[in-house]
Image 1: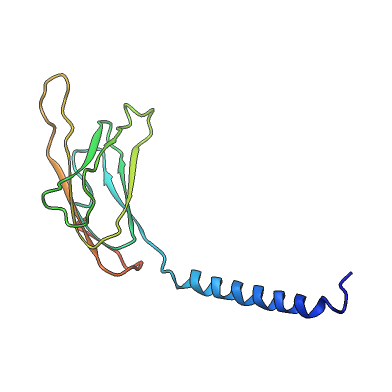
Image 2 (image 1 turned 90 degrees about the vertical axis):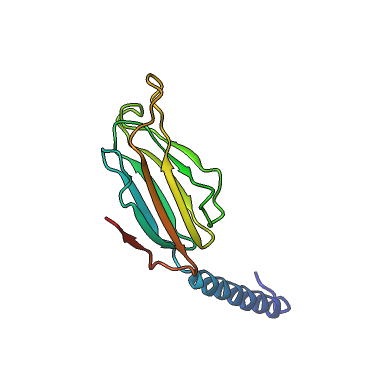
Length: 150
């Protein structure tokens, strides 16, 4: 039971909680949504699309639908997004139980991210077909990312 002396405090607590929750909802709604983009290895030795334009805060998922393994390796000499030392295996469906290998990366700075595949055949020592791509990251968050070069 609430006593008469506790009612003013309860009103204050309820008013404070309501104001706090209202500010939280406004703050959450002010954050723009991020967009999720995809780069596909479509069962042949290439990245599709070759070129992708996104915004800061967006993420890119590489999906390897090829039977062969591939990699996503950053070309650090040319990259200006700050994403260095990326060297991730994308298992092919043959070595991954029929499931495409994936890798996701979120971009937090504007610039250019150049990447390539560096897979080498262990039996011959030869490198496979050259594959490369480029992601341009525009400043400003938003969901206005564009795919190019499809």
